[in-house]
Length: 311
Image (cartoon, rainbow, N blue to C red; front, side):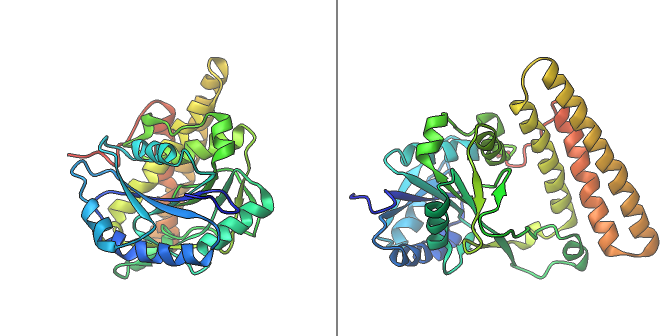
């Protein structure tokens, strides 16, 4: 495959038993590729289903740009590292989740922002699209709403659901996704924080937005509060991995515990005020802060929560 002006670009979709979502996504990616010609782009579907169930969906899509890869080792970290390996000949790797759909200018905006800034990473907004209207408490808490930023803003970290990586810079730093986070989530957060810590820049692209389909099973109080606990937990665990060993790591553990405890106290107070006043906003946002703080304290002392544990 002859590389275009941006080098070879690999758009990678990690998937696990979401064939209907893949069939909706792959034609949209072909449209994105046509819009950025003559840049040479391939789509790589990395299937993390041990049974390889996505192979039939990729074949049925008829996408001329897509190739299928089976990664049977369980855990999203293995799939992300397989993506890095499959993009060995590529200059750029762009992650998009299998349950997302790109906006009209998504890929073009990613590439333009990278050309302009030369950043090690480019991130964009993820906009929720609900399968079923969530209850008012969920909406009041803003659990699925992500913050937008100005074009080119430098970010401290980013998720892999909508992320471009400059592989020349990633390889020069020797970065891989940490397998200890395979079933807990958070390996993308650790990876991008480490990238920034080592001198790489991650910048924001306003035109590179995607929509994320939120299934009804996730629009529940139990699920969103469990997710907040997990996010806090992996935040602390990532901070400990990045801390220097010895005294500095012990100090980081204490600092994370203090920050988490502060969130528990502030969030607990706010949710009680919300309950007393009948305010769903205060109750939901207080609950959000409270459970993230709990997760931070747990992670600071070695606790883990395997959100992606499989039977």
